[in-house]
Image (tube, rainbow, N blue to C red; front, side):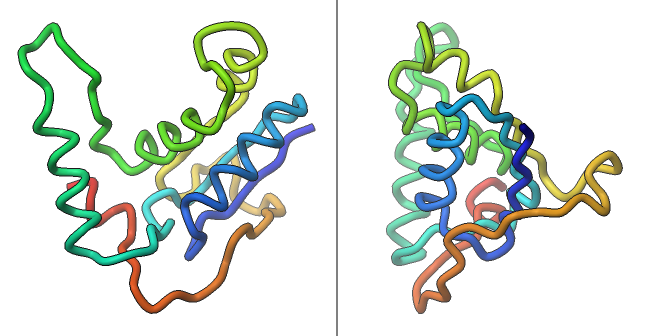
Length: 131
């Protein structure tokens, strides 16, 4: 079964936990509009946190690398909610997750699910930190 999730104004953590749970059950998960997903909290704190993570890379060979595009940021958060993305059922679940910026032509007109859509006072969109 394929589950299509619309990320517009969805809270990142809630969406990621739902997507990870469904992928562990064996469903294919597609997340659309990754740039419109929101991260709750102070804008300054979130930006400082992401800048600090990206600045920790020592040389070219060392890691961990932090993604810079909004779809890869969302997929990385979902990966963190899986048991072990390198082996076993975590690897199988991680391979069933697809994240897209915007809506590709193949998913236009497809019925989508809205997850974690509470309006918050303090938030920042993923596209603002993926510059």
